[in-house]
Length: 117
Image (cartoon, rainbow, N blue to C red; front, side, top):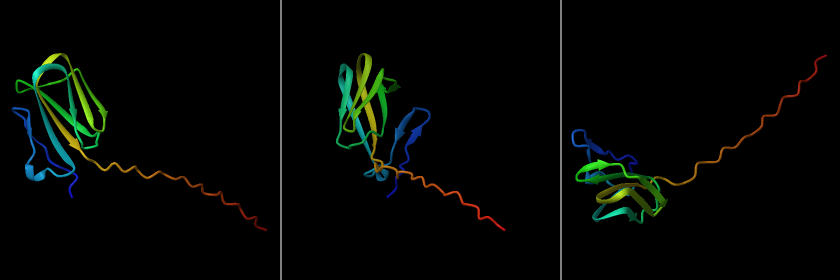
């Protein structure tokens, strides 16, 4: 199972694409269309991850929201200075969440010199 999925970006339009055949259980893509102007957008999902990439589009132009909050592993909140209509595209990466091994430190005893006669 590959942990890397290519995301193709059209440099002229700045739009992205992912081949459907390359999407697997490690990557989910959500699209939230907001048709009623709101200064707060909330996306709830069931992917149990905080590893996300967020893109916001208004009139087919990418914009930067005022704030993006990853509330927890199941919810993302995006806020704007003014009520906004547009689309929220969210890439959710289900990366391996197992903890890294804890490093252990072992002391090397200092050798005791043996006296020579």
